[in-house]
Length: 425
Ligand code: PMP
Image (tube, rainbow, N blue to C red; front, top):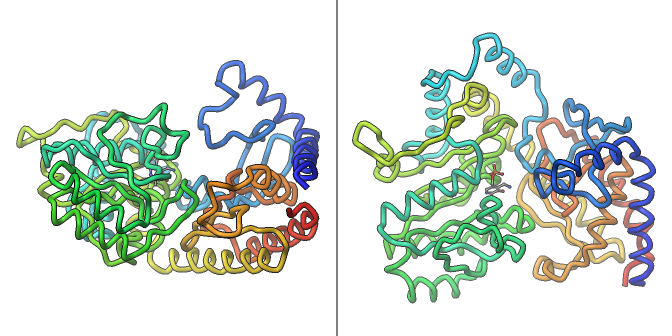
């Protein structure tokens, strides 16, 4: 059946290319000045990525006149969809002016709201991205402990230069890493026995997002807390994606208090954003009045992100809104898994709340062996039916996605299962 699958993928790509002539032209033009016509690798699509010309609510409009229900939600940064409140805040900033090169009030309101949401965060600093936040947190931990070694996890993703899948190796920042298997208490215990006194920090996602939406085992994460405390290493939770799981992120649900936390994605309302924060003794090292560490960044407090972030964190996204979107995600995951279970296709669905990933393998343990052709076919088939997901199978529901939207997606997946059943090995 392997040839049948290859032919089905080729046919799906042909159909896509024919349906997107304008995007194909724009992609060819882009490829002259952007490598592969791309400036964010994860957005690459074979044979070329369609070009968006506009978006509203949960819908993307492309250059060839298609509308897609956006189930990807900008890889989780787009939690708010494209609401009028955020637009209004941006318009206010336009009226007031921007690019001050000075401090202003909204950053304090934003910081107060972040500190109120995360009891583990006494103080916070803003950055432009989650990547930067993680680099700063690692450097802070190395400085504070006077140690070099950094514990990270296989398949972890903390930004392009801090990616621990195989593909991340060439561009990885050369810290002194101890790379451990995720969710493996025994391996972590042994590594701490061996390296304990040299460990500056542990950098861990409570759920591996880019690694396939693999939730952390609560016992494993609690164990990392205990091991870090025992050797004096700084425990850093990368909540860039998981901060949407509750008002206080995954750490609130898990009842685990890290020493530092990194944030990003939705809290900036869809604008460039990142932040790192934590215990006052660690963050206090940045106090300029005390001759502290220098943390630079022209756009750290850019007027747009600060104003929008302040409103998002203080008012717009509370416990109820998050519970609604995360419960919708849980229902969708169960619905998808039920469709796959009823079909001969060996697919499984992982995730937590509103973050999901569809894998073309029978169980999460087999993800590394997934046949990428199935991913491609799934992506193109559901796109053709009007649903935009990540080519790697990820979905991040936004607050604009309705039960009708997820219901229509379930129907599209059911049709995919029926139509492609014959290709199952
Ligand atoms: N950490 C995690 C867990 C992420 O998912 C991401 C982005 N996908 C990052 C860090 C990097 O954030 P950014 O893309 O804003 O640099």
